[in-house]
Length: 386
Image (cartoon, rainbow, N blue to C red; front, side, top):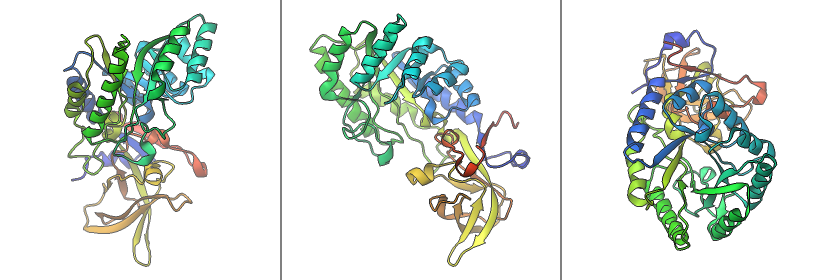
């Protein structure tokens, strides 16, 4: 079943562009609030790195979610969209002095610290401003996730976080620094995770670490388990909203929280992934020796995930109901990796047809580049085109 798109409105726009169905986004946010709201100590932040379109950020902020940022630019985007500074967390393995100072100036809720040198610099910069920075330590739990190798983050071999063996030492060190306040532990094991067993494994590891701290009479105020929940790229219409009920229930059942602890989540892809599609026009139909190509005006500069992660996006010809033919769907970039899909069955395509690359709301527009001196794609919402 194809998605529903305002094709007549699309024909008046210059392609390629991103189209966001805000009804899907609002239904997703409503589901998140409903399911997380069943547990009075759950707090959800939106991971801005998935999509920083201002119109999308504004809708997410209106829903009441906080913001998870991984750069100074994302902090500015969050503030511009109206996110309260006390609901902004700042993660990232390589925070610059300028970015740390920005977070201090806005008095954000928390810095998720990834190394001892970073902790020392935050303390130094906070001292210069006469402030105290709230910090959580990102602990690398050495928990694998069933996902693409490039988007795992919780293994010992990854660049992220502080090793479990160093956790006590870093906590003790924070107690000696006058301008940081230790408030939490942060974890994140990867992205596009669909196996709840991965999150159960993370819960078990956190429980072990919490018991270790509890033996020292340390109860951490905030536990942050990151995000990672995936979406159904194969069936975007059938499963437009991820199973948030199962996701939050998994943590409620398996993570042993103390009554005074707050559990934080940093969901990105699961929030915005299904609301967005990349809309592109067919430039040429090219007959090869053994196959035919549908050559689009969108390329890997507009949606890099297939080239970077060998990611699948459902492709639809939204302007044809003719019989099915098979195509390799490719872009115009001078790279052999500029391929959206091979041997794709589509309604017979002609020059000028519009294709929709579905489930592109996350890591689509935000990762677009100007390679080949190409213009960045615009982003439009369904409300704008109504």
